[in-house]
Each structure stands twice: as structure tokens, then as C-alpha cells.
Amino acid sequence: MSLQGTSLEQIYQRPLLNSCQAYFSIGSFIAAILGSLLAAYNISPQLHFSIIALITDLIILFSARFLLPPVSIGKTRLQQAAKGTLAFHLSPALLLLGLLAFCTLFSVGAMFDWSVLYLSSIVHAGAGVAASGFALFSLSMALGRSFGDYLTTRIGSPRLILLASLTAAAGLSLALAIAWTPIVLFGLTLIGLGLSVLSPLALSAAGRIANENRENTLVAITTWGYSGVFVGPPTIGFIADHLGLRLALVLVVLLCLVAALCSRYEPA
Image 1 (cartoon, rainbow, N blue to C red):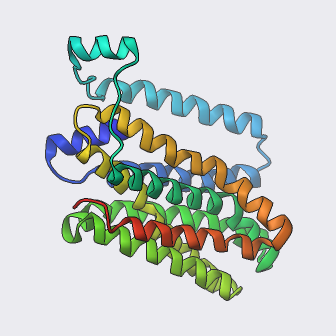
Image 2 (cartoon, rainbow, N blue to C red):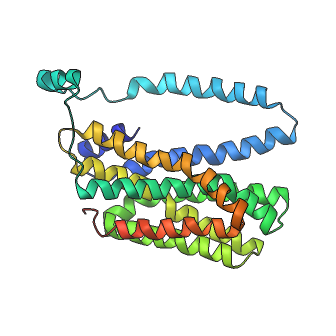
């Protein structure tokens, strides 16, 4: 999806990747609502997942024919790829974009897995309210990405990265400082809005500054980013076992501040 999105950005010469990834957040929000409804009617997980798998497979089969064709890479590059010599240069800017993607998706993964538990165990919210916190987080991410491309055009990528990172850090700091349900839900909204645009901005910037090896560059940035999704939740869990969940989530605040520092080096 990232390669398709950056290719469309080059064709239309304007930011589009946030809008593309908004549908991922919309899907998460719909899944949260649908899962709650099916659970309320005692639908088994096996039937639930079977229905979802069938629907998504049909959507994929239908939409695949509209994908852009692979970019022709030429005989020389094919020979280099066959020999394993097709490399790409990781500039300082690309390394920072990889760090930005890692910090962002580490934080997203942590919020996906731990926000509900924070609401239920620390804030002592009811099960329904705790579940709504995740839905609110997903909805705010979808909303943020829906406006992400417009904001990128208006204020530029570096300023938006700085503003979004600080918004996420402020939202989580507020939720950790004041364990009152309305404040925590408001904080989750700010976190979702802030984190929503960062990963698409990192991938979009990588696609712009990469030259002939754009595909490899995007694979690298995506790999670094999604490694944060896998590392984030267990890391938070390990720290929570020793220091408590509230202190563990302070790490996410720090990573949001690191993401803000990356804005100084991301090209406009």
C-alpha cells in the first residue's frame, strides 16, 4: 500500500498517503464496533473471524485489479538484483525517517494493546467505557489521517511532524497525570490525532527523497516502523510488571518527543 500510495503522490504531485492510510484506521474503528456487537450477541470468535476473512478476501480480489502496475526496473537492475548487488544508500535523512516510523508505530502498538487495560485497571472505568476508549482512539486516527494531506499542503511535513508529535505527547501526558475517565478519553483522542499522520509522513518523505531504489527504501522504512508494533506492547508489559503501567507508558511519551526531534531533519 505504501508503494502504491507514494506512486500516486508522484503521479498527482500532491500528498495522498495519509488519505490512503485513513482507511486502515476506519477499518480498525469499524472492527471495534462490529466486534463489540457480535460479542454482545454471543457470536463465537470462529464464526466472527470466518465472516471477516470472507469479506476481506472478496474486497482484496475486487480491488487488486485497480492497483498500479509494477515499475519497470530495466535489464541492468534486474541483473544486479539477481546477484544481490542492488543496494541503496541510507542517508541521515532516511535513517531519521526510519527512527520516526519506529517511534510512531511503537507508540501506536502500545496504545492498541494497553489503552483499554489502562482505562480498566488504573482509571477503574467500566468494561464498556474501556472498550470505547480504543474505538475513540481508532476514530481519532482516522480523522487525523483524513485531514493529514490537507495539513501537509498547508504547513509542510516538518511542521506537521513537530505539531503532531507534541500533540500525542501532550495527550498521553494528560491521560497519565489525571486518571479521570473524561480526561483520559480526551487524552486518547489527542494521542490518536497526533500519531495518525506520522507514519504516512515518514513513508511519503522516504518515497520523495529515494531515487532509483524507492521500492527498497520503502521496504526498509516500513520494516523498521512495523518492528515497533511488535516490540512496543511486550516492552510496555515488561516495564509494567516492574514499575507499573502508568510509568511504563511514560516511555511512549518519550518516544513521541524523539519523533518531534526527527522533524528538524525531514525535508519539506
